[in-house]
Image (cartoon, rainbow over all chains, first blue to last red):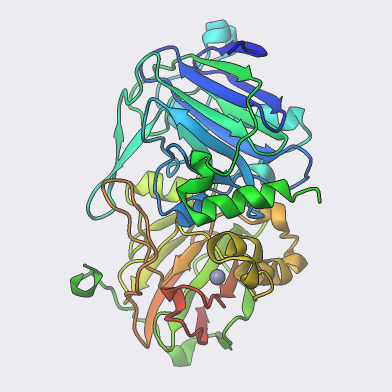
Length: 232
Length: 217
Ligand SMILES: [Zn+2]
């Protein structure tokens, strides 16, 4: 399918886009170990946004994988994960803060120019502010391409280089969306090695009752139905 | 699996007769209170297996709120127990769990809402009472609205994760009289919904009251 939009986000950078309902956003890791900390908002609503706990408990999962439906605070589908080369995308451990980045030593625009090290938080906030939003709009993110392994007692361990260059995930917008993302390294990463991510938007196609996200679980189908009813 | 689980527990030395706060929150009701830095706050599961959905805020800045994801990442563990430091989304410690006779608490299951009940159980649950209603009602006087509702703690609730990435709501680990106690690391607001959920085992299928106790430093 021909991309309507194609944009490469360098490692350690931040970006946002407005994605029309029905279109498909495909994210591709361009480097080994790339991470894409991503927040989703209903573009037409001042407060409705991705709710990771509700997404997980409705679909009995502690990770994001196809064909899960990403759900909002208000129980409506925001996006469906229509495909991925990976069966595990972290959503439990949040995004990096300035304190994580400071562990890699001093950095500034003055000394490092556009290679300066910035946290995912600073990048996400920068994009949110461009859209009239701010710190209160931060919520749990999905760290596409990252994995944090869960031990038998609930202990958490970051898995380095979970994604290889070429790994991808595709999201179908179920409402008009504001997508806000950062390609800063995972907050549990012990190295500063940010990877670039390619974003491509494709036209998408209407889905029917046999769509894998509809048939995945009754909860997934109800969230999709709620999205259809957002503007009754 | 959970029936045989043995978890470490820590008792508190604080006595109920010395408390400056001692209230009972009815099933499905809520609470908003301020705990000064150094003060302690206890939630007692009076009848067992009652989820106490709880949010903490920096009392001076409600945008600096409890963050489940920052908390579990920094402690490298998915569950909360004695010793857990509950962090804000700016990474500031808000409270530390100083006593816990239950042993383990969830912070990944979120709160119930009328809308998410529809997703989980169907449209017939749309008008059942839910935690999000209570959070919005009790949070409003402090300026806590929908935007300020982060992902909460579910004290006394059991949401086991598995190494293969599964998550479920399981029968509770709590029992009548078990409690959890936190110490405030700065002035904090505590916002509680005593969960009214009827559709899963998080309240033992029968929501019951909880007791709240507070001590100054
Ligand atoms: Zn509830």
